[in-house]
Image 1 (cartoon, rainbow, N blue to C red):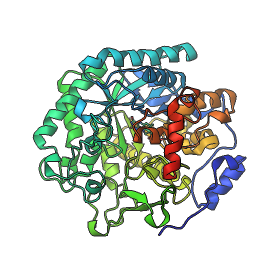
Image 2 (tube, helix red, strand yellow):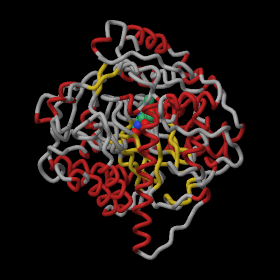
Image 3 (cartoon, protein in one colour):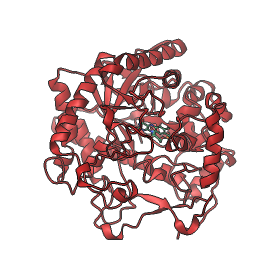
Image 4 (cartoon, rainbow, N blue to C red):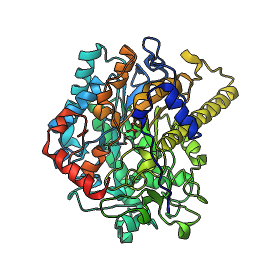
Length: 517
Ligand SMILES: Cc1cc2nc3c(=O)[nH]c(=O)nc-3n(C[C@H](O)[C@H](O)[C@H](O)COP(=O)(O)O)c2cc1C
């Protein structure tokens, strides 16, 4: 049984000193600068080490891909999407890492309202990009340093392409815990090698569409339990896409080869779940109707060594092992991938490690410990991957008798830039931490997810005014996840007036009350 604990909420920490003291009391390393910097903020520095589609990214914050479960049923564009992309443009971020998940074919959608990046939606997707660019131009006066990617995906185990309530899972391998949890019942659901070869062709075609409509890069999504992420952990799968590291990463190599063989010069990024844990569940001993218990790991005692995930310690699968994460980062650098966005785990089976929150989504669990622990883990992993990349880079440079050049802030250069995740939970202290980690080279860029929905221009505000508008700060209520888990469109219902006035907001309150979320 887990031990209940009392969460110290971030808004009760009134000063940076209070925040630091609380972080220290948890024994964590989350550094924060004394004040929000404006003109000389490290967040305003261009990212000099990569050039994407001929462009230098103009500052150090990115918008993560954020989907809304709000497309048309044939994967097309809607008003909500247009508004979201406009707000991405207004955010001031000079890197739009993916926009939102776009399925490379209809049966690979995570929900019946996910965008599909196929010929029939080309005009709509082009329009989203144009809206974003125009909004950015109008507010910031320059788009030469704005880099936009599209996230290409197949949802694998988490496909629900037709009915919001019906899984139509296609998997890489049978999983001893997830199969039970998500109703995978037959080996027929395993994609064959021939199925994968066909799917690679779909990625290549979607990358062509992305290039045609002006995307600067495609993000080949390898995170959150979706198909290509699952393949990275396909230790038990026989054949050319399973078993060895080389086999488990073959899909990435073949997609990139396919894109190049198609004569498509588009740049490539990857979003990766850098580590994983076993699935979690609400502690049954502390759950009751109307009360969601704190998260505990599913029983994995029968699954050791745990060969069912990527970046997870096989002997102790509630800890990470970055050995292969480092190898994967090196592989990406070697393949000419320009941007690597590091996330973690999956929102479906261990949301606390992926998107730390004070309030759980309705299919999740109450926090079993301070979510800052989960924030610190992601910050630290990105820092380790970056240190690893710098080391491999400098070894390579030395062997080529090449000299490293230093960028502003004394950063060593690397041809693969990293974007970090899980900053939204930091709330008021997001700018203070973001400044530090960029200034001190823990990451190249910080990425914003949920905060983007309530306060897209938080870092534009921070770096121009030196202050934030507290009423827009995301409090991690998780309504943006609870809504789609219950068949509703996503959005920030508590803080964004556009969603607040929708009848769904009332529905959401009832849903949350019923489950105790
Ligand atoms: C409503 C919602 C939609 C999301 N959509 C995507 C997506 O399309 N692709 C993706 O890689 N991650 C997606 N994510 C994950 C976020 O990009 C991000 O990793 C996560 O929210 C943690 O970052 P944060 O702490 O800044 O919110 C989504 C998250 C939420 C809450």
